[in-house]
Image: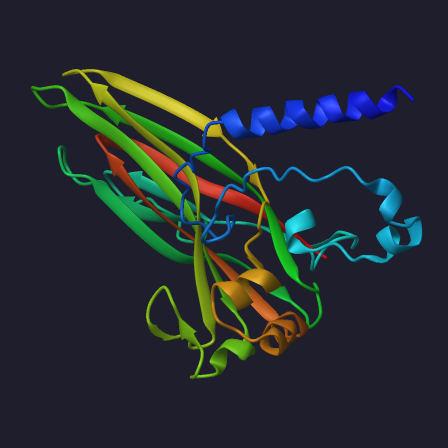
Length: 277
C-alpha cells in the first residue's frame, strides 16, 4: 500500500520544519480589559496523526477547553443584546461661558505649550437586571473625535491627542471586603473600574501651522469588558463568586479621560453597545 511511505515522509518533513523553526516572540500588548492580563503566544503543537484510535462518540462527548477555544464558558451560547449608550461630549475650548452642561462637559484649554487633560465620570449609564448575561460582557464601541491643533509658538512643537473610555461596573458581589483589587491593592468597594483605549495621535507642527482631524474608529469585543475567566484568574474571585457576579443586577457607568496638546478646539464622545451570552 503506497500511503505508508507517504505518511512517513510527511512525518519526517514536519519534524524537520519544527526543529528549524525560529522561536516566536510575544509582542507588547496594552493593559486592557479587552485582552487577557497575561497574554502569551502559544507555540503550535505537533500531534501524531492517529484518528482511528478515537471513536466518533468519544470525540463528540469531550467538552471544549480553554486551550481548544479560548473561552470555554461562553462556547456555543447565543448572543444576548444588553443595551446601548452614548456619552455626553467632552469639549476642550478656550471659553466655556456658552457651554450647555446637559449636552457636554466643557474643559478650558491650557495655553500652549502646556497640555490639557480631562477625566470625566458619569457621562452615560446602563442598568442591567439580574441574570442579564451568563459569563461574559462584550461591547462594540465607536469614538467620535474632532480636534483642531494650532502652533502659536515660535518653534516646532508636538500636537497630541489621546482618549480612553472609562467603564465602572457596580455589583454587590464586589462589596465583600475580603476581595482585593490587584490593580489598587484595596477592596473593590462594590465597583470594578476599567478603561478601553480608543485613539492616540502624536505629530509635530511647525510655527503657525494649523491641523484639523475628525475620525470615527470602532473597536469590538475580544476578551470583553469582563468575563467569568477574568474575574477568577485576574481579580481573585472564586468560581462561585464569579457565577454570582453574573446573577446580580449591575449598573455600568461610562466616562472618559484624555490629553490634548496645542489644541485650539476638541470634541470627544463615544457610543457603546453591550452584549453577552
